[in-house]
Image 1: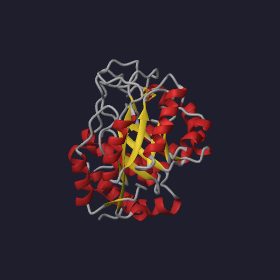
Image 2 (image 1 turned 90 degrees about the vertical axis):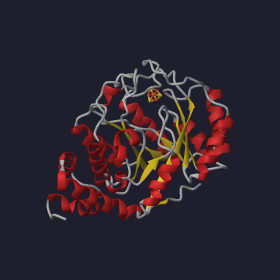
Image 3 (image 1 turned 135 degrees about the horizontal axis):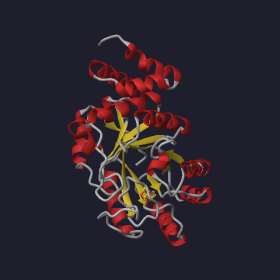
Image 4 (image 1 turned 135 degrees about the vertical axis):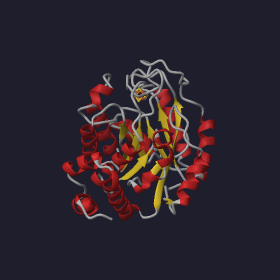
Length: 327
Ligand code: SF4
């Protein structure tokens, strides 16, 4: 391997708990042998913290569509015309059925509901009950939008372990994506989750028209937020949404972004979620070499995922094992 500017990135990331902004920008523009060198560095950092363990998580959309918010990427926003199914909080049976599959996959289970937050006391009570029941089957997480500290504490008492709340993108780029709530409101929810003693899963989406500088800002803002896990999604533009005409990013661009996140956030569980199959195509297994430590398996909120058997075979073929997710 060529000895150059990039060959010391892993050492810098491990020594300083993350590379500098200047190095992060260099990662996003590297190509050819330099890029392969960067992937090797990111992989070295991933291996340092995670070895051959890979984390997997799965989600179920327990309430879909009809959301009053205007997130530009989202097929569930009431501001968009999409063919996403619309339904209120589902009954427990399909949740339990999916939970049984999730347990067999050794995955975590995330309950996700559309909307700014869960305002209806009846709906929130139902979610608490589902959490209590599901916690007996597998590790349960939730993504319910903006939430108060009291509600976060009630979820924790019911057996929830991780609350998911993305910042979506950089603080500077956020107003281009959402106008109905602010970045700071998202940070407020993150504080409430922390005060309630829940673990935090916080990341976002790339490929929404943001500049490379925004991706660097996003990675450094995540470093400051210091979540337990970092889900990275790549925009798969959905017809009828405000971002339907955005050109999807190329596989190598996505892999550069993953490597940059790993080198900026060395010890975090970085999971590749929505858009993996569509954006990375044949290069999906490369996400680990680029520094990812986990993937979401099963279907996404409004789009189909790859067959779970294919993902589990990919993990095995790479010589990895699924980490103990507490299931
Ligand atoms: S991402 Fe969440 S809050 Fe934003 S429009 Fe979609 S369902 Fe609503």
